[in-house]
Image (cartoon, rainbow, N blue to C red; front, side):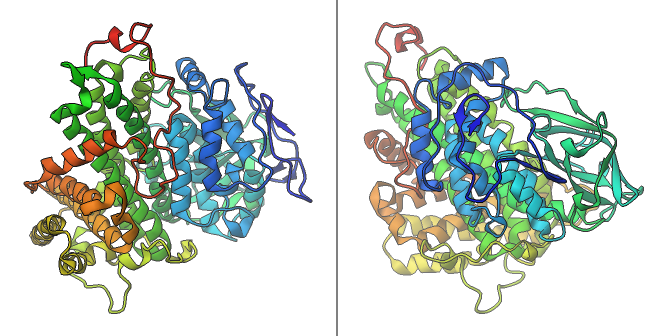
Length: 631
């Protein structure tokens, strides 16, 4: 069968119905808006989709006339139009299967693999990744609730390609979930909803939304519940779309809202227990915040590909820009931040399986830290690109301005940097280094970060609102001692010892912190930021210990990637190592001298040019390098 716009969709699984299910059973799906005339047919895969096969498809789709053609996506951006062709191609490939846990018939098993999957899409276009990936966020509360909700119904919908929105925010409410005023009141055996949800991704285009509603007039932590709403099953006129909002970035995404006016929903629309909405959302956010890091990593991949090309072709002062020390230093810093960001994201994704009881801390650190590292990386790259970072008409580089705009919203998703850091600041006394040693026999993070370690199944029942400890930072002294005992990498060992000293200072400063009521003090927030830096350094050391294979290859020789990560960490802790400049010089030189070496640590088969760039422009043609003289 064919999706809107002529994009071929895979045939249903044997025995499955071609009709999409509704909240009350099987029924026809509402047709989505038609796409533009710029289309290509995407052939459905003969076999079930695999993550390793996605990159090849993305490369194919990014050719001229394909659904991921950069020109097509740029045109959608200009018109603030939804990237329907790209999303339909991902549907046809089978991406919705990765949004559904295996116990409900999907392919969602490992969070680290899903992060890698969405990262590949984000490396092509962030708007597409945000628009399509929202279904993961919309469904996560339902999966976490398990049998106490409409999980099986939702699974059938998502597997049929139906997008799902997550209705948490309301006008004027900001990040304060307890300020929500949309109400759900008992009505016969079901419920009646009244109020607004805005702004919400996919609110208008999707038929399904997981809605947080006030079920007790006084609200409070037990005064909210979750409901899975199917707009097609509500009485006519009781659910109305709110207009799409113009946005600085991700302009083509459906950032809109819904207004409920006494909308009746059945009893089985309840997700989890009555009054359990806030707790379920907070636990689910621990997973979605980790997934959000994939958007930043993809943006970093995209930006590094543009930078690598630019350094290899831009001439300044009679020589290549890559030959200038400043350019190599800035490029090396950009690479080091990418490695540090993916180290934290990878560690957090695997921690979701192995130490879910600690995920309230791990996810807050990952969400506050990773997008900010990529924002800093984009600033470095933008400075080097000069005018090419601002002008959309310069051949091959116009994508950077869009990329930079699009990524600015990622730090706001699923709790802003301030929200996540404030949550971390509130529990610093519990997490103070040395306060509570890990139980004897507890495996080191270096154990479950091994590539051959079988991860535990993702168990949302083990999630907690407050972590009792942080196993990663607790393992820091042992990781440094093991590195020193190897006596093979003295420069990295010296930086690791400097990290230990910073970690000990952090513990003393947390111990001296005076508790305050209300919002965290500026001093507490700064300590929380230092905690994030120490966590990132510990993650790099644990990964270096766990993965001997990462010590091979160009990035691994002489512990180059580890030294780059630790140099960035120590600079963030105001303890910049003397050899930082040399490390960045090495990383920047390698980025340009070895163009076939992927600028990533985890997937050496992935392309290092996640965007399809046209051939190098002629010296005098429109949009050529000579059109813009700024570096």
